[in-house]
Image (cartoon, rainbow, N blue to C red; front, side, top):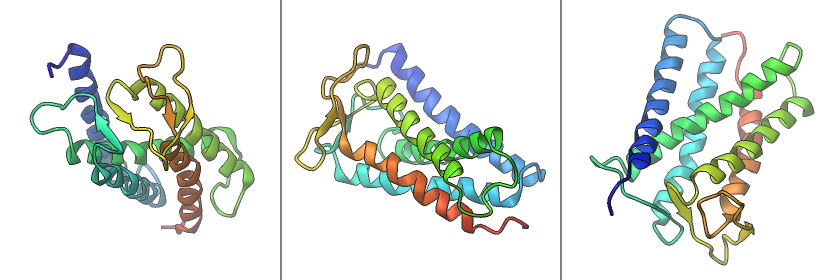
Length: 188
């Protein structure tokens, strides 16, 4: 299958953002720009993201498949690694929203407001990502255990719609990330 210019843009953008996030958080750690617990939170977010990214990869084309294979071996596990880093960045965007809209101190004890922001962000960004990329970069197949829960939306590229599993991931994952974030020591 021939790649169009937009496919190269998606491929370049995918890896550019992932590499930029790694450099950003590495420099923040090296230069003491962020508290250490936030650097750890980013790494934990990447690890949490990798659990579903690589699970989806190992489930194979029956579950989800790439619309087009990217050049130079950048499909498959390299793409899943890149998406895991993106997931860490998406979790940290939820943390940033908490810092922007809530009073300090944050993440010292359970707060429905903190969790609510992170949960709302997780669901919103998942729907946006699916709208933009489902059918253009990947397709989730409708299966008995992954039914369509949202039909295709006007302007989206998918003919399948939006399936259950990716949505559930971004309902559950922000809760897990938030509970781990609460337990990270804040004074180191």
